[in-house]
Amino acid sequence: MIDPGSGERAQSEALGTVLLLGLIVSGVAILGVVGTTALNDTQKQVGTERAINSMTLFDSRAALVGLGDADTQSVTFGTGAGSYEVRPDAGRITVTHYNYSKEKRTETMYNESLGALVFMSGETEIAYQGGGVWRRGANGGSLLLSPPEFHYRSATLALPIVRLANTDIDAASGGPRAVVRPGERARNVFPNSSGTPDGSSEIGAPYDPNAAGNELPYDNPIRNGTVRITVESRYYLGWARYFNQRTDGDIEIYKNNQSVQLTLETVGGSVGDFAMPLDGNSLSVQGIASTHPVTDFELTLNPDGHYGNMHWSLYADEGDEGFEAHFQSSNPGKCKSGSFDGELRLSVYYFNDTGSDYIHEEWRNETIDPNTNADVSVSCPSGELTVDLLGDVTMTYDDIEAMPGVSGSSNKWYFGSQITSESITGPTKTLDVHGVDPGQRDVGETAKLGFLVTHYMGLLGPQYDLTVTDGPGGSSRVDESTSTGTLSFGSTTSAEYLTYLHITENEIDIELD
Image 1 (spheres, rainbow, N blue to C red):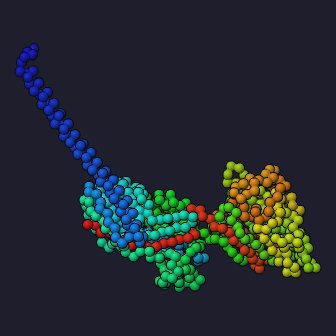
Image 2: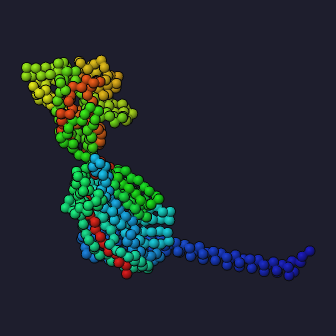
Image 3: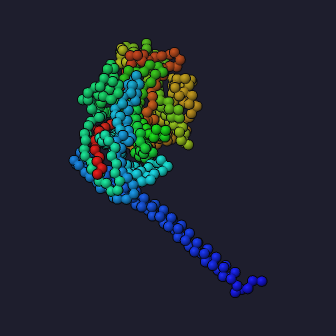
């Protein structure tokens, strides 16, 4: 039995005191470590926020210098954790025009380094590059803090490239001052039709000066092919997000070399005068606007002997959407005693199966007299048939399969199987899509040919092919090789298209002190 007043109790109390003191000392040490870590994190955060504010200010000052509104500007960065570095070779921008010719040639319009001014704190980077400010985290992702000099609107891209003219790496820590001085400013890259040819298919004006038929000047509007802007950068994901915000172009991201590619389709624009495609061949419509864009559409068709039993169409087949304008002549379909002997019949068909509500609309006129009609006429004795597809021919909303002279066989139209299997049982569904549309039409009601053609061609846009079919079978009645046409239309301004391009190079020099 232990005596409560014995020395063993005293030893137990002493041991408890030692343990308590140990716990207190350990707690203080832990608090010290945690407090130091928290303080360091706070200091880093404060330093990063200061760098963001300073870099954004630097961005605006650098723009003044680079774009020609000031000679020299400076910014003093706040003190704190982190360091600054000028990297002349950081990042690269390339602008390339692909497939600008029938031979699928390529022209590199611009290919230069961008350079960067970078703040580093741990694994965080705040960088000025290409006229923008970017933040890169430990996981490699990057965010846009201030937009670069990239301005896209209404199919026009203005690209005043701001790049570093520095040749050496410069570094500083603490609270350095950055001085920005101008280099060469506003050097015209594109358009630049007076540029000196460099004798190659790469950079130089005009395009490919040594290739006959491909001496395109560096001039607007951009025609044919695609234009691709490629940015190689540690901040490529931020560039990709910015491109995605500003355009609907095709964006490809390549993690292996830290790059992003933005591809914009060029707008081919009005076709103008054209030689009629042969049977089965097509006329390309590129970049047509969506709201009644056609301003001129005329056909001049020459007979292959005569027009008797003629079945001739222009059609566009986009899979789930299509359009066909079909021309048919009664017999004998030829000039006789100075006038055309026969009637011309015209039908227009449109369908769209892209939505939940299937659309098919059919229009017809089977009593066109080409001797008296100003929009569909035949010149005798040559037999030349002239059609103004924007004319005032009255078209009736009704089944075209029942037209005299065309019933009985689906092979007289390109979309014959659909036309013969569908019946018009209710009103139209598309004639209120555009602001200038007159409203829906019911069976038996009318509309002008010109309205219908530009309406449906706008719905089909922005690009498709108009294909010629002359049949059925081998019963050709039009000599396409001597026939012609004219097609003019307004161009789209959709955000994946490019009509006008403006590139300038603007150099700045950054000095840290």
